[in-house]
Image (cartoon, rainbow, N blue to C red; front, side):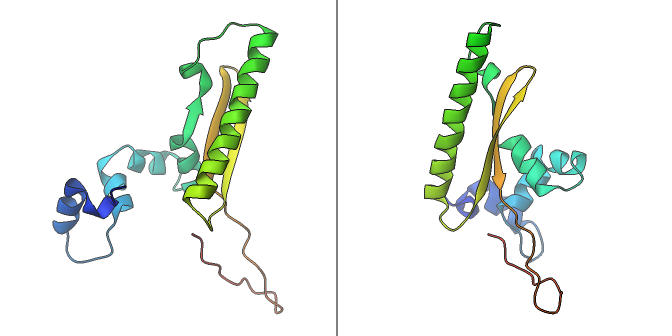
Length: 133
């Protein structure tokens, strides 16, 4: 698998900036619709992840408008959700992802985003920062 920093277009883009902690996410924010999604979703990283990491089954599977078709499509969505969860767990050990299925008017949508947990509170009642991976 190629590392994003090894991609010629990304490394060339980063080289044009003064020294600083630029990475492939900075590149995407500036050079793709990712930046637009951040603006639209008020910088909510999880919402951006869910928007970009989604599959609307109706976009890839032709199906009828019957209860049986709806049930079958939901079963496919649940299976994709389980498969994505297993693949993400294997590819990113130590990270947790929320993989969800939403049933909307146009059929089910499967999406995922990194799970964020509430910050733990120490004995004094102060929030103890936790590193998110």
